[in-house]
Every structure is written in structure tokens, then in C-alpha cells.
Amino acid sequence: MESERFKVRGLTRLSAEYPRRLLSPKSLYREDLCVVGDVRLLNESAIGVVSSRRIPGRLVREAHDWAVSMKLSRRVIAGGFHSPMERECLNLVLSGLTRVIVCPARGIGRMRIPAEWKPLLESQRLTIVSGIERTLRRSTEALAARRNALVASLADVILVVHASPGGATERLARELVAHGKRLVTIGGPENDRLIRLGAEIWDW
Image (cartoon, rainbow, N blue to C red; front, side, top):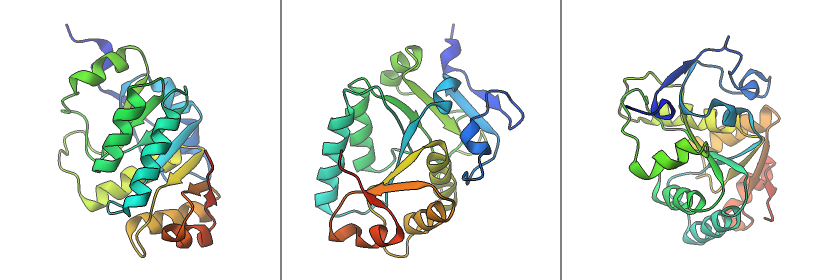
């Protein structure tokens, strides 16, 4: 019999378990959700991680070092974890103590849960959440933007690893700053545009 931890639950904005941060004036996301795992994780203090898909090699290494530094903490990290760099970070933190919120850029009604995630769902270290229609199985640029808005809205602080000039991640960063969200980034000339926008250099 399938564990209750692996079943998809619907969560409306009227639910007592709906994440409080999504009801805040700072939130960019107020849609109903589908959740697999412990809903309570969505109300804990979290670090959101977003990035443009193409990033300089130095920043890939820095992001790897950041994930290693998080690995032995019990902090909550939220992200889409879609690009190769993000998936590597996800694998690193899941091999430690970190708790993780995974936000796919597609519906999760028919999602096949990776075998290595199932023990983490059982131990309440992993929650999967999406605001996208359950049956949508293909990600698009528009769905990725919605996913990133959800990641950022669930988090207290958002680490923007890199934002390509004029790209979707930079547009998201501008919107988050306008909503009063706290942005941090990796220092260096590659991220000068983000720093000028108001992102802090994060020394972890």
C-alpha cells in the first residue's frame, strides 16, 4: 500500500495549512497548491535558490561550495533544482541534514517520485509542492517563471546565484526587490547588476 507521504494533497488558500508567507503583501504567489510530503515544512524559515540556466563557471563552483556549507545544517532550502548546477546542489544537501522544498515547474499529479526521495519524504526532510495544474507534465518558460515566484515567495531570503542581463531571473529579482524581499547573491563582477539592484553579498 502506498505511503500517505507519497500522495498528492490539494491545498487551497482557505486552508489552515496554506503557507502564511504566500498570504503576505510581499508574496508574488497566491494560487492553490498541490503538495507531497509534510505541509508544515512550507511554513518554516527557508532559503530560496534561483538562477539563470547559463552561469559563469566560477559561480557554479561557488554554488557547489554553498551547498556543501549547507549540507550539515537543518536549514530549509527551496528551489526548482532543474538545471545541472541546481541538481548537483540538491544531491549534496540531501546527502546531509538539510531539509528541502522541491518546486517543479509542472504539475505533480502524475509525478514519478525518485526512489532516493522516498525515505526523505517518510522522514519529513523533503516536501514537493507545485501551484501548476496537476496534469501538466511539460515545463515551459512561463511555468518556470511561476515556479520561481513560488520558490521566492516561500522563502525569507532568496539566493540568486546569477541573473542573465535582461532575462527572466533578473526580472524576478527586480520584482522581489520592489516587494521588499531580501535578496542575496555571490560577490563578483558577474553579479554587479544584481548588487546594484539591491542584492546583498552573502558571506556564508
